[in-house]
Image (cartoon, protein in one colour):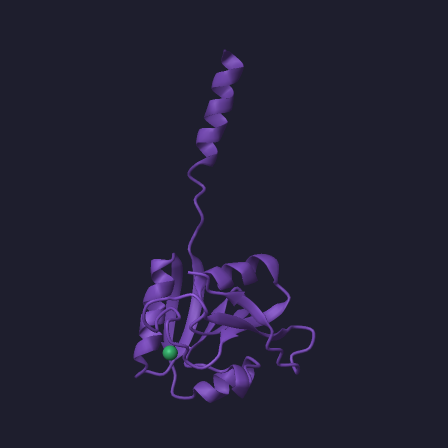
Length: 148
Ligand SMILES: [Cu+2]
C-alpha cells in the first residue's frame, strides 16, 4: 500500500510540467494584413510571437537564404529555423521534431486557404527551404501537405 501511494505522488509531481510556449520572432511589413492573421494563428496554436515590423523584408530574406522562388510576405524564426510565409503549424512541428538540419520551410507566395489566408483546406503545402549543409541549394521538395 505504501509503495502504491508513493507512485501516485511522483506522477502528480510530473503533471505540472506542461509544454511552454515556443518563442517566435516574425518579421513583416507594417501594412501586411495577412501577416497579422498569421500571427494570430500562431498565437492561437500556443506560440509566443514577437512581431517585428520592417520596411526592408528583402534584406531579411537574403540574410536567411530565402530565394525568390520560395519567398512569401513574412519571415519567422523559430528555434533557429526559418518559417517563410503561411506555413501550417503541423509542418512547423514536423520541422522542429524531425528535421532540425533544415534551414527552414516555406509556403511560397500567398497560397489561398493556407493559415492566415482564409479557411485552411486540403491541397496546400509547405516546401523545404534548403538544408543547412548546402544553403545555396534552394530545394523545393514538398515537405508537408495540408490534409484537412
Ligand atoms: Cu501573407
